[in-house]
Image (cartoon, rainbow, N blue to C red; front, side, top):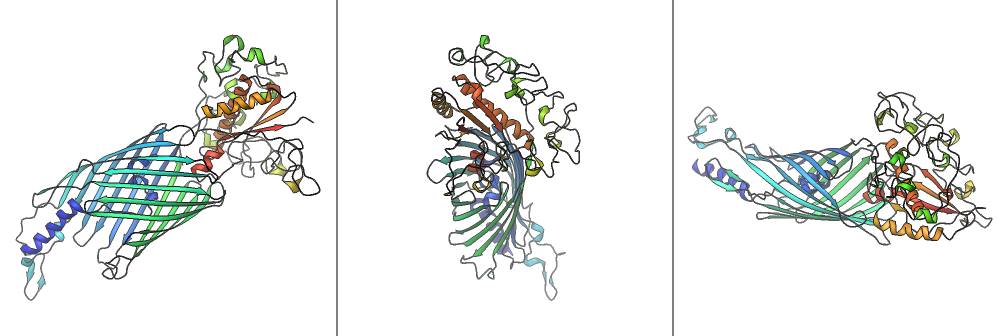
Length: 603
């Protein structure tokens, strides 16, 4: 009797002091469990996730883990909640965590490099159910076990509670090389306060600290295929865990794809994973093939996992600041709202007085914005709305607001309620059939435009501003089969201007590039410079149209401030409709947040 009791209590104390926390094969599907620094990992979205793991099914009470989490990123700060539980054994062993998370993210240098720091504070509970223990005194000779008999032991509550503190940091980076790649490395420390636990005997023990290091590097082989090697190391007490694996990611469209992975937890299991991504939701499946020394004792049983993450967009479009460039001139009176200027030039820089000719042209609605640059040329508007208005002050410009006189929601296209059969861009093609919902187009091209009128939709036209042939994807071609881009189109030998998520400000490295572009254009006598604004697919499509407008106007205004004649600049904005890369990877989304510069000869 006493021996059994001592063994049970000893095992309970050993678990508190030395045992390894639970683990998951799909650790990326439970990011807050992997590293506190991963809280709020996606901009403008609430993430809700859950994961369930079961192993050792041959045991009467198999070992199970489950975790659920929720988090959101609010500007630079992130908030999250993590609940996790491990269960095993006939005695009802259970370890539970409820943790609140707070994170901070900071861009590092130029490009898409960020450092994230996070912390978790909450309750950790470990225990067994004393009522499920049996002792010698409870066995009745000739009858067997009799739970009505006294055990003869003075047992206290088998549950101990403690305050737990975890911290972690991650660094996301982008490598500029011939093969586009991005990576993530992280380091996390768990139970940093070494919380005290009290056993059934009253003995005080400390929960061992745990350290986790992990890293992954994603190589984009092409627009549809990515290769991602990964590594994880964890140590707690006397236990260590090393996981190495390789994922292959396949992009089926801008918002869907799947991953297949294989790896190993050294000396423990061979790991297989699969993940399906579809718009706002991702489903995961994991399988562990047991190769440990306990394989035979476990009756050759393995482990299985299922997981899901659901993303809910929550960030509504915000109004443009009244004085974006902080030059003391309100945007509605500022001809260059993105570039600091002086009052006598209506908010434009002083150097424009020397370099730029006086621009004259029609302004039908008399709002101070020439019709060529006015998105709403027949309605008085403001510069911050590119010549349009926002009568109902709902943050949705009137040119894309189906209910411009009623405050509404982005998801309802500016209306207070959802309206069936809506046609947001008023081009005669209902949204449910329109492939360019917020860009006016033609029915024959499913609601998309054909700017050069060559019979190829701008969405598919590789030369959308030069009339070409369908056989050559809208570009001019010759009888020998070569696409002749020199006929009517010359590409400026610079990169696209890329932007941070949900931003329209031009970063310093791109300002230097645009300075060189402006210097070249000042030597040109006649030209047409096309500026195309684009976004990734995060957020609402109507908001992304507005964001692409802001980006293209930011580049246009900057070039004008350097002396480029605005009469030679034409602007277009496509929102999320013309992606350059896959939107299911951070690298692909970064490529899509851009303004393209295209120089055309005047024939």
